[in-house]
Length: 285
Figure 1 (cartoon, rainbow, N blue to C red):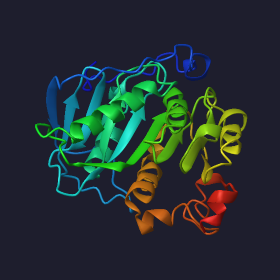
Figure 2: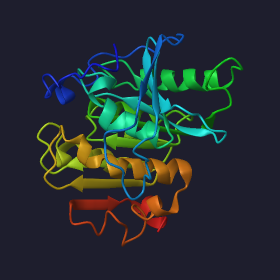
Figure 3: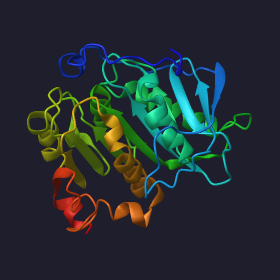
Figure 4: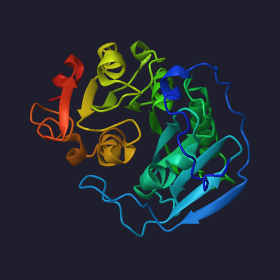
């Protein structure tokens, strides 16, 4: 499926009811099919992301994944985000307001082309394929990837997929935006941010997201609920999600301050109606 197609979130309630109905099979490795160039992200930059408006983004089309990356891959190795989509939509739904934004900020984003990402298998397959290309001398990615800086991120069913992918030792951190219920947070290996919406009637903060957070007590975990946010308002979370990636994958001190300590940026921001740290996350402050 082309990343240029904007898909509508059909039957959004399926984000919960269909999550995990199909067990995803690992994607197969495929050569790039095409390359699309953009002039830069449409989402606004934030105080923590430092995204230049003119940053050039390249979209590489693989058969099973769509890759968003800086057009100019620098000599500094780039951190990675493996991405899982919500139920029934592909990467195109998130493309310009999120995935291109992250690419312009210096991340290489590998989005699974599946519309059923709950297992996390396709996400992990994309990450492994990128790491394989990092080792190939004839690849554009050769020596350009920070193999020890991989995040699993996703929305809705893809958020559950990110949690499930977080059980793999390739994944350093997890970013779960309004994650669906069919996930095993007790198996996550790295720090995790659980994001919920106070007005989300599809993935309820109290019935679904908060219980997932409560079960992730083996790792530093943070639960944050955005006031007034419904299920299809992901644009409202872009700055916070970008800062989480910068904190976890780039050790960015300014981004870290948004999450760590009793007076963290989220903790003192009235837009966020609830922010909770588990014991391991609280100890970081």
